[in-house]
Structures are given as C-alpha cells and as structure tokens.
Amino acid sequence: MSDSKPLLMVVDDNEDILFNLRLILEASDYNIVTAISGKSALNMLLTLEKVPDIIISDIMMPEMNGYEFFAAVSSNPKLSRIPFLFLTAKSTPEDIRLGKMLGVDDYITKPFKKEDLLASISGKIARNKKSNQIDEEIKQIFSSLNIEMHPSIINKDQPSLCLLMVYWDDVAGPILKQSYPSEKNCTLSIKTIGKQLFHAATSIYGHDKITKAQGILLNIENIDKQGYLFFDSFPDKNERYGEKQYMLSVIAPILTYFDSLKIRELLKEVSEKIKTKQNWEIKEYWEKILEVMLARSPLLNPQ
Image (cartoon, rainbow, N blue to C red; front, side, top):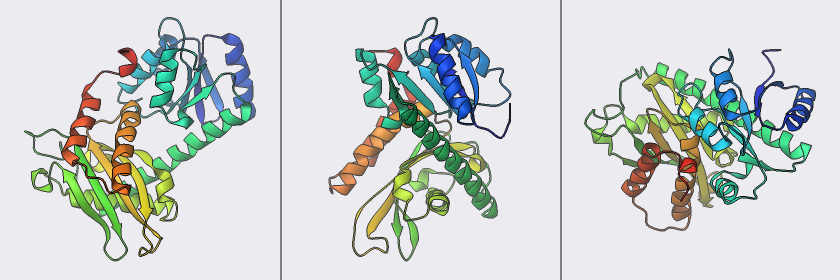
C-alpha cells in the first residue's frame, strides 16, 4: 500500500458491492480498506496508522448503521474532520431527510454511475487538499504575527464560540463588519483573526474563485481552535472583481464534519439575506449554531 495514494474507507454490508467498489477505486489509483458494518469500521479506524481521506458508507447496515457510524466518527476529535460520502437508495424517509441535509456532493444514489462516484471523490479530495494548504498558510501567518495559542478565544465566563462576518475591501483588504460576541469580549483580536483567515483562503483559491470555495473546515492550530469559513458574493460593478465578496466564519474549540453540514445550511440562510438586503441578527444565528454544536445528531433522533 503506497502512502502517497489517497486512502479511502468503504463500508457496506453487501460484499459484492464492496468487491466492485474496491476494483473501481484501486483501478483509479486509490488505496482501499473495507468494512461490512459501521461497528467494524469504527474499530478499524481506531487502529489504522493513517486516517482515511474519505469514508464511503452505506446507510442501512447491521450492528451500527450509517447514521450511527457517522455520529460516532464525528464525536471523535481525531476523526471528526473526515469527509463522508453516503451510498443511499433514497427510498426511505430517513434517506430523504439525510439527502436534504447533505450537499449534493455528500451522497450518491444507488444504482450509481462509476463516473459520478469518481467525480465526487476527486472533488472532496481536492477540497481537502486546499483546506490543508489553508491550515498551513494560517499557521505561518499567525506565527509571523506572534499570535500564540490560548486556552480560549473569549473570556472563560463566555461561551467559546465566535461568529464573524468579514467583507473584502479593494483598498483596505478584509474588514470585520460584525462579530458575536463583540470583539471587546475576546482575549484575542477577532478583527486580526478574521482578516488573516480571509487572506489565507484567498491566497490558496485566488479572488476570482474564492466564492466557489463556500464551506471550508479548518484546524487553526496557533489558537488551538477549529474554524468553518463560508464565502459568497453579490454583484457590485464598483468592485475590482465585479462583486462584493464576503466571508462568514465560525470559530470554536471543536467543529466536526457533521457540525459543518448543519452550520453550512445556517450560513447559507444568512448569505441569502445579505444578498437580498434583508435584515438579520448575528446573535440569533450565533444561538442557532450553538444549538447545533450542543445537540445530539438529529439523524439519531428522528421526529
């Protein structure tokens, strides 16, 4: 097994499907490990020397189904950022509910085409690679600014979760427009953090493609936090790029891949309000994001 190849974990209780997927993926230059249930996959994850780049999982499986497996992986700090690609028949209410929550590149409907599967995998690996590059860029920027690790971004008597909105200005660069809690309640400069996160992302994606990045899950090692960045824009002919670009960012001690899916939907709501010039309250969405992070997985608590 070559360490230079991406490692994919495939989980399905149908051994014929596992066999066929292994043939397809190994022929496409991926390393593969397989498991026949969520439970056996979780045990394997805890012993693997290398964390998989992607987990491809069926939903309906014995012992531990795909929902439970997803929740268990998301609750483990060492595994929580692994992207998932679900295999679903979309024939049950649970599958339909999951599909609505996930982005279109987060699940493949059975029976699937080889080309669709490989496109989804390559897209996720490319985004992961860029996220890792941004992680390293942020680390270098923060080190050069002598921003040191701190046990919490905000005061110990305040919730350690921050929501930021940063606009790009052609003259001044990134400008912090709003934050909750306010910067005066933070022990580190949220203005500086927001500015450097925007700079780091644009240095990897480029301004002309930054809004295509949308959601990026990051490990901000220098301040011992994780971040989720959501980029978007609205037309503005007065701007250099013909659009006003902005970033919505969540910073917290731990952000799992599952958290990021729910946060993405909330930030999409905010972004639509920004683009249509509707009023929105940053505190209201901060509270919604906090609820996401405190709640158990809704996949395990169907209504």
